[in-house]
Image (cartoon, rainbow, N blue to C red):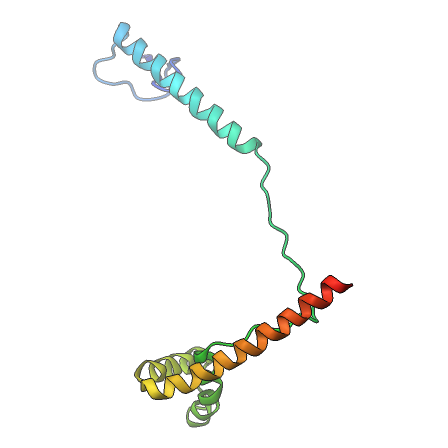
Length: 140
């Protein structure tokens, strides 16, 4: 028994027919509507495929440019990592990081402010060095 494929509107005998096939105007109109929507979807996919992908090229870093200062947490991490690694020599980097993070969370505000002041001082020095570096680029 043949029936109309809802996607293509063509007769197809390979699929199992429904119990009551309908070949009336309603079935043909539905198949034509589905055919049009499938064609529109295919056209949209083709248009999307034609657009070339724009890849951003990574900007090469100048080795003479001053490096950005590290955060207060990074300074704390540097200070405490060796002590934790000494207590837990078999701990992985991830485990050490979790321990340091939990220590940072419970660290008193006064102790955090010490690291924040170091960061602010490093940031001021960085901005001065960056201004001098950029001035040297302009003069060249």
